[in-house]
Length: 238
Image (cartoon, rainbow, N blue to C red; front, side, top):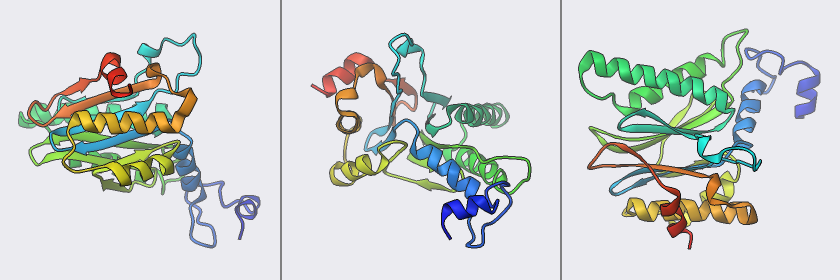
């Protein structure tokens, strides 16, 4: 049965309604929204983790430096997203509150998997409850906890996976091919930044501008999120 037939028969009108071939169409629409979102890349390196994302600032009147696409969840953990960024903000704020509450209660930083599971559980709940819609966003959550360097991806279904390197959003297939060819587990953060930024540059082509790039890293020895300056990014793409 074709997608248009599904729509005409009303199988996409409620999140709780399965189509005859076992699909939740609103969840599939949410995943499509992610594919059309801004590009976001995550890489685990031998000395830390990093996130690089396209701010997608296309209007010259927008103050590019005021556009934030990488958020700090805790000192040792950060996130970026592709899809509906207002949805991402709600999930990130929830994660920040959970991390802060854990720190106050146990006087130690929360592990990254606990944050990922909580976000995944909420996303999954929104696929089975009437009157709700799925979160139209995928998150990349990266950090360094007691178990080491980690990178996770969540999606609108509530599924999450741990990755060595991955990309979400526009250009996912093209950039993932580059990562498969050029990623190495022994890469340093600097080498990983260069790979991520040059991959983004290849995909964007003539549309690439430094003002569109947002990047941050967490080094394993410091366990603190550091934003990457535009000057440092400029040196990587020379």
